[in-house]
Length: 376
Image 1: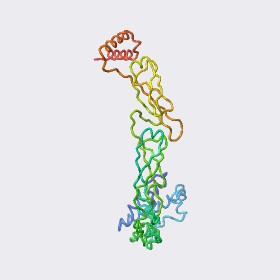
Image 2 (image 1 turned 45 degrees about the vertical axis):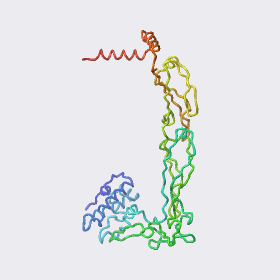
Image 3 (image 1 turned 90 degrees about the horizontal axis):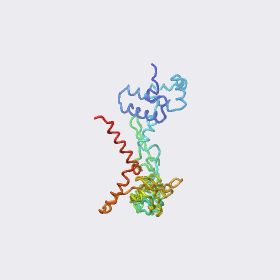
Image 4 (image 1 turned 90 degrees about the vertical axis):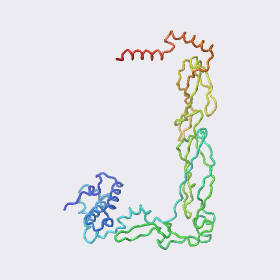
């Protein structure tokens, strides 16, 4: 009986990556394993077929030969199909599924103290602090190494001993018929060592709770969402293991005058009708102080003026951003009768000539044409 294509057996394409092949193998092997399909000969045969296909396609040399010559190449390499006969041809299920259950139960022989957990701290700063940088003093609750036992968990003068159940590996194997499962040692909980005489200060934990004060340097140019990593400033590890890291999550607070977009700052600048028409000069705020902004005659509302290098410095080098000032022509309010009369007189002087309001004239011309062409 001819054998099925190995790629078809694993349900992957011929250009599948090693990870794709491995994932498919794990899924199919778990599904068809004999321990999950008692007295099911079809599942047993499928399991053998899956294992055989994976042995070939997971080996780059064998896979290349199979791609070129097909099953004939495998026969020439010793006949990987000869797995029938007594049971499963001498397969060790612990070896077959070592990588699968190693992932589930923590891996093989990975005993030892666990690295400390990473910590996260949300830090609110002002826009000025984000632009110029600062040194922030923070206090974080954390776990630190016990000073009495130096983090070992054992009473001073003693030390942890190798676990007799796992031999210091932190893992033990449990046999269930043909199936061998590797799991965390229940005696030492994967540490590989046990404490016979625990420290009286930390009760054998090797760590204790404490508030820790730190100085955090905030570099100029940071923005909301940026993270600052402080190595080994997280929780202390178990039994003297390496500490975790501390991540400072930056949140820049809204500003009363400026809005930020990348390296640039934006600011709305109200100007009077007279300044917009005749031009003028006014002071505008920047984070470095006041600067003069020249407004040319006939400036329209919405016009944006750029003030170079008054924005945010680049966190990764390069030119500093700019300040973008958007002018808003302000309509006067609370007019007196005399002021209203003067404005009406002014309006009469410019209404007769379209050159004073070119945008309005153009817009009304388009409106007129629109209605003339509209069919009712």
